[in-house]
Structures are given as C-alpha cells and as structure tokens.
Image (tube, rainbow over all chains, first blue to last red; front, side, top):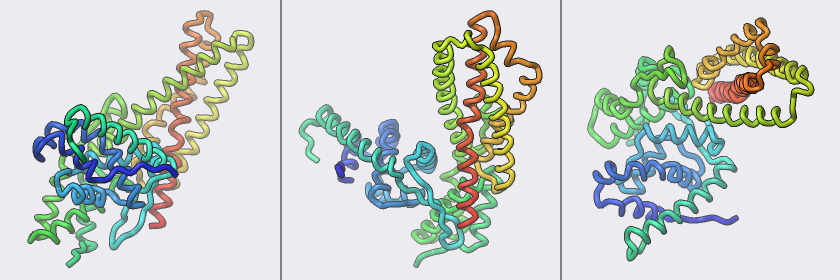
Length: 137
Length: 222
C-alpha cells in the first residue's frame, strides 16, 4: 500500500521555523497549529496503534522536547470530531482503578491519514519555498 | 517509582467533576483518567502532596469546566461545562447543514416529478413518514431509558427529540393535508420543505441512540 512518511523532525521544523521561540509560537501561530492538530493526532495514532488522551499530549510534548503543548481544550474536541466523522474508533478498558478510553484509527481514518499527510507535506514544501527557500530539512 | 492514585483519590476526582457538571459517564470517565494521569505524573516528577497536584491538574481544566449555555443551537435552559456544550453545539451545527441540504434536495425532487398529478400520494406519504418517526422516537427514548447510564449523546437525543411531541398536535389539526394541498405553490413547497426537514431532523439523530447503547455496553463490560 502506498504510504507517505513525514518524519517527526520535518513536522517539528515546520512548526518551529515559523517563529524562533516558544512564546511566539503559542501566540502567533495558534491558527496554523490548530490546522495541523488533527493531522498530528492521526499521524500519532497511525504510528502507535491506539492511544489515550493524556498519552497523546505527552507524546507530542516528548517528541517536540516540550516546545509544543496540546491543551486539553483543543485535544478532546478534535478527538471527538474525528470520532463522530468515523475516522476514529474507541475502546474502553479498565486500567488500575479507572476506565481508560483508547482511540484508534478506523479503516476510513487510515486512508484519510495518508491524504492529510500528503496535504501537509505539500503545504510544508510550499511554505518552505515561500518563506525560507534555502532551508534544508 | 510509579505512583498510582488510590480508589479514594479517584473518587475525589470523579466527585469534583460531577460538582462541575460533568455528569455524563462517557466524558467523565475520560476526564477522570486524564486528570488522574496528570496528577500521577506530577507526583512522580515533583515533590508535591496529592492536594497540591490535584489543584494544579484541575487548574488546566478551569476554562473547559466553566458552565455554558447556548440558546440557539442547544437550548437556553440547558447548561453544561464548555467541553460538553462545545460538543453539542458542533453536532447541532453540522446537522443543521445536513438537514437543509437533504430537505432541499428532496423538495426539488418532488417539484421535478410534479406531485400535483397525485397530491394525495405525497400527502399520505409524508403523514406515514411522520407517524413512523413518531414511533421510532418513542422507541428510541425507551431504549435510552432502558440503557440508563447517563451519556452525553443520550441526553442530547432526549433534548432534541422533544420536538417530536408537536407532531401529534400537527396531525390532529390536519396541518399536513391543508398545507401540502394549498393553492399557492410557494406555500405548498415551503410546507413540504418544512415537513421533510422536521423528519430528516429525527432520522439523522437516530445514530445518537445507537451510540448511547454502544457506550452503555462498553461501560458495562469495562
């Protein structure tokens, strides 16, 4: 099956080169970040099979070395929307003394991830050519 | 060392969420797990007591737990934390668009096939559709009552389906027959559009009931 692989460092660089420091990133590129959130979630689920909400926020934090922080207020609406669009499926499991809700991609979601990553790859390429033509990832 | 919260501490988180209006099991269980994981991480990383970690974890949710209402998309009388209200509003907005598009298509189709030749067929057709929906909504509400674990989708269906109780009134007053056979073509098609929209409104909501049942089953298993 045809798959597009976008390395995390590429996505990270894309988000980071918009601005030079963390504070600016939170403030100025929030719209850009919002637009990429769903793709980031889908990419993580594609790589990890199934994940729960807190795990997603921590994974993104770890990959971006704490630079990118997905807030709860952004994460759950995005997850619920993907679920209602039929792109994610939910599994519930008792872990220790509480219930845990795991999200995983459906078949439709897996196909959609490929499309969204291709779109994002094009976008990164175009942005790179426009903003910093000499930048190499 | 891996820190695990005790049953009492988990119950404490649950209770705080309930006091803040998170009473739906599907949302509550997810938030309990998230906040508990956050507290456990804080206890592992920093030298904190449970109470301090609890306050720090809940501080991140302050905005999402604020009580909201929405008179346009949900109901002015319904209040819920922002995280739940946003979900309901998003659902209602999306469905509003679907209802308009689907009803528009059906009305255009009816206009194209010139129902004037057999107006009674359409009249009885729509009456039957309304009666079918009335029955299905009542069955759905019974199913929600039967699977009684409170879920956000079940509650949303119950609120949205209240409109079904206007249907018997409309049927009793003969509103359908009078308007669908109205002499003015504009009024006829406006009424057909309205009636189809009303029925599509219910049809599109049935998946909420299925989701409520599925969630109840999943919650019962786990």
